[in-house]
Length: 138
Image (cartoon, rainbow, N blue to C red; front, side, top):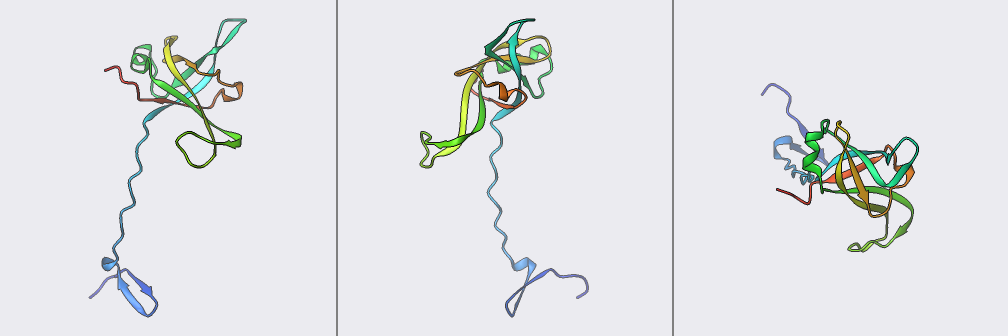
């Protein structure tokens, strides 16, 4: 028989490739959130209001597209210095979350305003925020 036959040598034994059973790796679940960037706080010319964050959602470029995201939960996920116990987990973790929700559009370019349980820190400006696909308003 001509041609290349893939094989594997195990000790003294030669195993042909078609005889090797490769289990399929489990499929990774898809994202249940849309990527957004925390661009800054709501502000006027001189005053800024840290209780309202401005988010730029990926793929949203006009004000009309924002309507779907109103009321959606958003999360700023970050790593802290110290490990703390997390509810529902047996191990302590450095990962922490600040939760908020999208409250209204901001401007005509698809930016949104969001309010978080605690105001986002200034070091988060330019960092990733997750806008979840829930709660549904359909």
